[in-house]
Image (cartoon, rainbow, N blue to C red; front, side):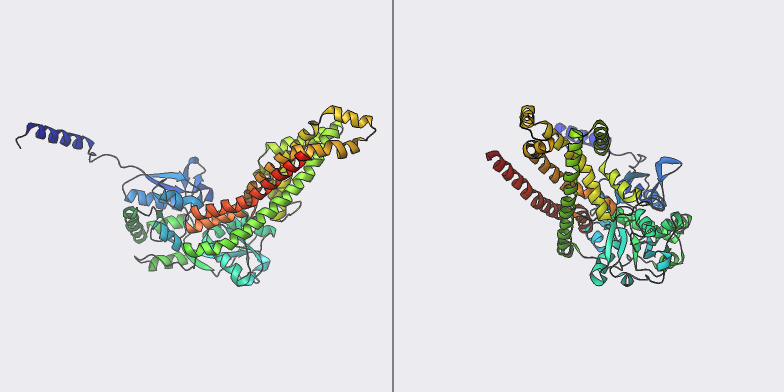
Length: 491
């Protein structure tokens, strides 16, 4: 090579490439794994001794995979229903938190071999032990479970076959509490969750015959098959050397059924015993469910707004016309209601008052939203009433009209015109805030959309459908309000 410039260029490139080469002893990046510590033990929970750390059998499984890859595990908190979506967008390398093996999950992501077999079991009150032994025995009854799970799909199938009423929760604590309280007739969930709740709460029994079998898996991004294959080899090795059995025994989830599963576990992934709709079938299956949920949302919003208007008018009138102590009490109501989260108010009405009065979930949702928005409506009406010019009121009094007649004939109609636009805004806001009532088991439009999106693994189609339905409900109301404003302006 006689060209000195070419030799210099090659030498420079070699120096740069060597300087960029990673030293042989360079530390490897940590293995980021996602889980939901809110799910609690034995999956993932905050360590009571050090809340900055987590513990659970999925924590130890993640540690096994990390050490097998020569890396250190690093926990990333994520909502359970978002684990698969988050791993696909690169928030972490692997998801582990009681992730259920489902056909649609394998269609969208790289999924590990099953490392634990669970049983979907029914929990019932002791008096119903002989009465409700199988799903078919619960025809027409309310059965609780977690949304976006295999158990929820089983209940949806049961709603078609036996008219079972699925009741979806956002956590696995309140289903069993409502079972003991008599709000639902049974709970269908993993035997791991059922046994944990039985130790914590008591007051129910677990039927011995499983409804279905399922498996927990680790989920990777669809393109990360190399890490998935390495994790599979690590999990098989830990199955064979007894490490996984030791972990499951320590967390009290090992039993004879698990031992039989480990004995027969092979290289091929365990087959899923459930029949869950694929993405294309799920689209068709969920459209009627979304429409039903939209109907619930609209009915809930209309009833809550009716309460808000009625109570708001009374509160506004009391603050304008009432004596000092009435004004003080109503001011406290308005400030406390506006100053505390509506979620807290829903929990207090539904769960906090259950020892005094046991309200159905839908009624509690209507009252919670209605009383919350009544505080905001009352401020609108009070401001509108006080915006009426005082000379008009004095002229009406001069003509001999009573205060009631003044309110009905002079002050009220003008105040209504002023309040119409903000009232419309409040109703649209209430329509959207109705999504919060899913925390007390009311499956409205947004909750049904979230379940749909989780099952098909995408928010694009469900989100678009949900937006269209919300717009179809809110836009006619806005147009009607504007038309009424124009009509009153010409009057």
